[in-house]
Image (cartoon, rainbow, N blue to C red; front, top):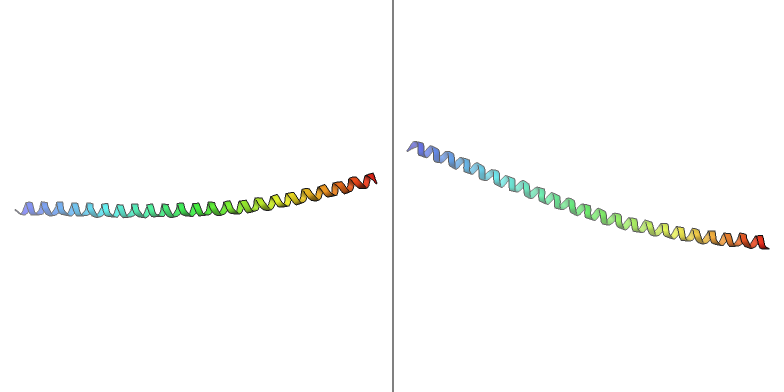
Amino acid sequence: MRIITRVTAIVAALLTAGAITAVAQESVGAQVKEAAKETGEAIKDTAKTVGKKTKAAAKAVGKTTKDTAKTIGEKTKEAWRDTKA
């Protein structure tokens, strides 16, 4: 009878240890999943911000280029007129 009780106690202890380990692994898995989700959202937000800043920079460069081209065109016309006069 004592042997059966001891074996039962050992089996119960092993099952309990296995169950606790499984729960701990699920907890770690959930933490990893949550961290991955947060990292993904951070990357998405960063990409969005970079996109907005790139668009703003491109607009600024485009405007500057347009203004420079206009100025060069005007100066070229003035120089051409001066040579004809």
